[in-house]
Length: 159
Image (cartoon, rainbow, N blue to C red; front, side):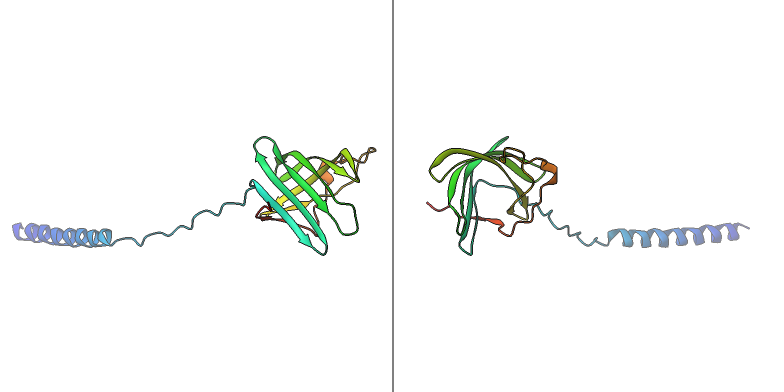
């Protein structure tokens, strides 16, 4: 009987010793390093110039200040139309830059109209919509269409 108990005890020790050794070997295998791609940050509106120039048309928005208010200079030189240049003051809300453009056109200073741009993929796309009775502001800002064929891209500012 003693022989049976001792044999059983030795057998159990061998079984547990083997299992412990196997689990230690599994635990000691180094895990493959996990590679995580850095998060891609969305382009952000920056101080500087955004320009469109093609087919005799040139539009430049030079952003000079970004805080709660976005300030800058805006100029349009469209083919077969009078050029106008002035200042922009607006806000960026949910990727839409909307504000007042105060400009000089045909020698008249102080003209004002509302303009809007969608900031998407690093470009500014001008928005269009129905104007109010004065013709200087959008009737419904939520119904603007941003399908401009003249997207403004970030460029170096011209001196």
